Image (cartoon, rainbow, N blue to C red):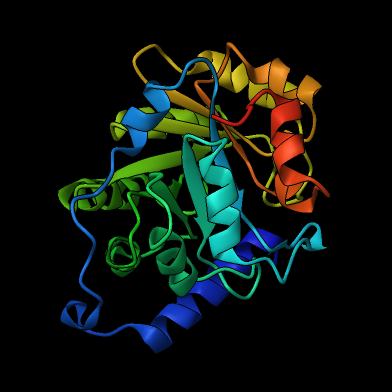
Length: 254
């Protein structure tokens, strides 16, 4: 099995054990914040800073990091925040999302491997304003249904693509926010050239988000002008001075 296949299989197994009636989920904070609007309002390239304690490719990054402390730090530099909601592979979780929601007014992206509408409800119940939907994981019909579900709950979706075929599907289902991931989730390799070409192929009227591989100013500058926002996680979390690192990438304290 590829890494992505193992993550999705584990996600389905964990979901089967925790799924319950929707009425049993926490009461959702209301109303949702405008995730897409926050990116559009940025002066230049917007930053989606990510809380990511570990990853399959890097292992432990900052496993003891406090979600609250990281959220307060990100508030000074970022326009939105992403929170990993996968526990086994990334060290996150929906309770972590709720902890972050309690201390920040940034729009929050719940970054999970969504395979079922229940996860969309979980995300909203724990304070998400947007959810990640992956064209590499979902069939086109599933993607369309989950996108509608997110919007019905007042959220937006970041629809992630890795190639031209997935981009075509994302556009067909009406994705407003398109994330182009430079990491091949089957091999975990990074290809910024491929991502740049795919960003260029996203038509006008969509919000373009560059994901993965943005580890230095040169990489960020490479997508500046091609993307409306950049999602940066591992590099910030691993930095000795995360605030200084974000400033070095072009996002000073606001």
